[in-house]
Length: 298
Image 1 (cartoon, rainbow, N blue to C red):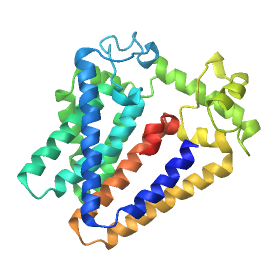
Image 2 (image 1 turned 90 degrees about the vertical axis):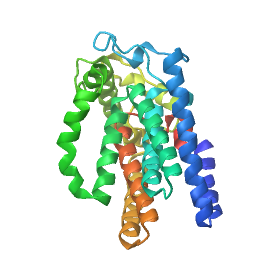
Image 3 (image 1 turned 120 degrees about the vertical axis):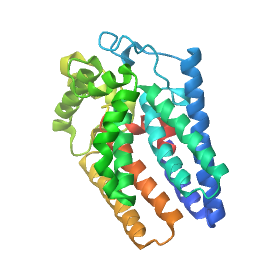
């Protein structure tokens, strides 16, 4: 029901925004809301508010990471996915701002959201944000990608050791989080060998009814921790094909609009939503993005 309601609301929203001023207001509110969410996440870290799960961090590998912020999204990985989309819009708004007051405002917003992103300790979200940044640069000034090695070296000397250790552990099967996901993917693939055509039905209840019989190494999970795998689980291979076609049309139409557009403000935001969604899809390979209805709604 929520999925249907959100899809219908998207149609309502699209037909409600009819002027440039309305669009500007919507973008401003999205970035402002993201900043408030991020600020609350930072306060969580400072004061130790909120729930923490032992499953969120491998304490043996990352003993210096004792707290991962989740803000209002209840899970640090979901917060990371939310921030990927909003940081992209914030970056475009910063570059498009015409007054120093608005530039300072959007610079502060982006800084707060990026700091909160670091505090999520979500490696998938960090990777997604880096990919989104690269896509954004490709659209606007591809030659800047040549500076990427220098940027990475600079980050090595600026970022805390805990962040560097966390990021460089991507793909390390010695990390319980990585091995946990790999086990879930293997079990899900084994299940889909029998249910690839129509899936097992949507929802956590359906997944937990069938998946345990195929679980790898006895690992239990509420979902497949991969958006694309989960779509096949929910509704079969046809649903995945439809989803990929939707993504193809989304990226194709926005790229075509970007090439035709002459207005710099519009080009910046078109590049931002392409980059944000590209980064979001990178993160979606490590988590079921729509498990959190707040992320699905956005």
